[in-house]
Length: 335
Image 1 (tube, helix red, strand yellow):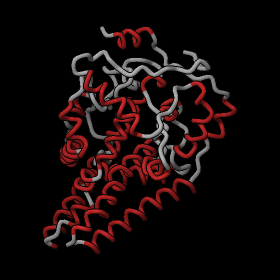
Image 2 (cartoon, rainbow, N blue to C red):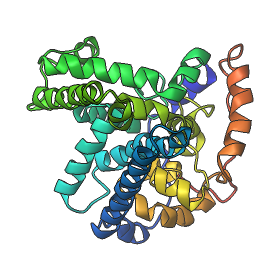
Image 3 (cartoon, helix red, strand yellow):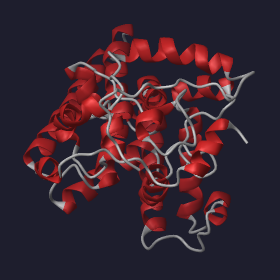
Image 4 (cartoon, rainbow, N blue to C red):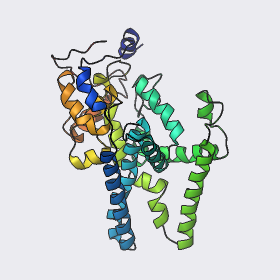
């Protein structure tokens, strides 16, 4: 048994911060105007760069707007799928549902699969035997880390699962999780996804052009997926496992407004795990409220990876090695 596993066995309740509920109450409030504005800007930017790609098609200059479009498509949709999947982005449930289904298609992960997996991730964050969303195991799989920079595994797995579900069948992973049947409507949605993707491929063949498949489906997800994967790595990788304190296994990172918009404020990831019911637009205020009880935030992605990469390399021989986050003296959390 590793030291981390012993820690998990000793502390069966998550550490909670001491925060006045009156201070949290206004941060729990949801609205429609701000997230709708953010969604509109995101979709408008995607549309603009898609049009620019079409106008420049046939020239190598088209690669630049195509890459920006793909980052918006892949990384932007992942962040929005995450927030709407929590049901916290919009006050109106129907708007959360609509954008959740839209972005689920863009990231090629069916919504019913994401809901169960991500709920379990929050319940057992980086508990190795229970968390289904650990980005990389310890010791690390370096080959998988490189392949997933282009979201190859996610896209191939998503296409395979969707095809099986379109036939109203269960995957091996479905059966292993105890599922005996698909949720109502899941097979119909999977067939719609297959129809859209097949129609996109047919359009490319008919037009003798790569454009349709570069704008819809797995190719833009893979082409623009590197930043998305770096964001995912920055959340928990290299930190303590099997501990019941989010401050020790989750990072907060200060990012500029452009990356913050793209990431939908999930750079405040520690705050999000501590209070997952708080909408993304209130996370900066939550950070200010609790930062005295938490380790200092990282100033950008660069210090995260300069700290993380040597740890990942060392873990190939010493899987018990990890980054030990230092709690401030003022931390007054309780179990």
